Length: 269
Image (cartoon, rainbow, N blue to C red; front, side, top):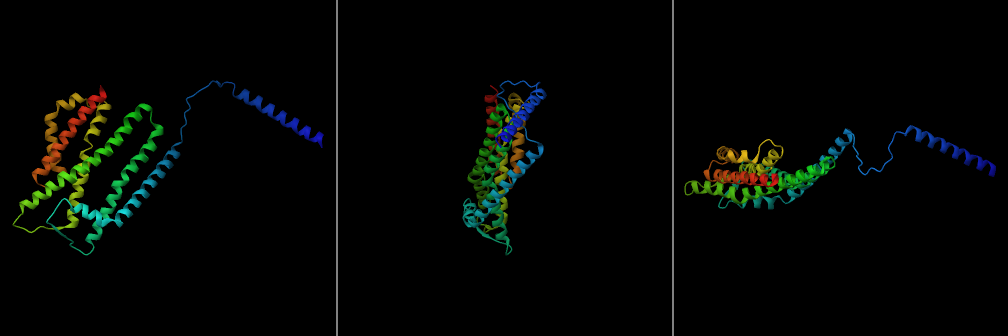
């Protein structure tokens, strides 16, 4: 029995030595030096699968936040009604208010799910970015999120009250204000998102400058056209026709534009 064990052991040693010899021959061209930089690349199918999973996670987070907002929708309705006073809201059909509350809950879930979505986007892009690209793209994504929130706040505290008070004062002592809640919500929704998108102007400017498509000096030289375009954008993006709201949004666009030029100059220098 001992002889049999010894024979098996010698056979295993012989197989190991032959395998080692074969391995050294077939790998004789390799340079066995210390290499700290190791590049791991996933196949395209793995990237698609990772993207699918992250989109799936975003979907469930938005759905969860939408359900939470739907349970507290009366509180949200009261917040949306705060910018206007002395107005009675009504519904034109039996299910109009219900549909409006579902839309409010969905857009609230989408709004509060945006930071999570941007986080998932960063995690997806981060492995494929260089250190230099990471230093540029990550601050731009976070700045875009902050600017969008700032645009929502500017719309809620400045644009919406200005537009609604203008309409109320214009029809004062002539017509009693009775507004459809669904139309009121559509009005402020358009104003919310148009202002939030308009506040992305500095991000677009910085991207154009970093890609060397347009320089900061060219942006400054075209200030006359910027004033004209900002006036047109203010008139197009605001759902109301009152001049005060358009002037406020146009002024904000001009301020954002020249702020973007200043930030681009600082980055370039």
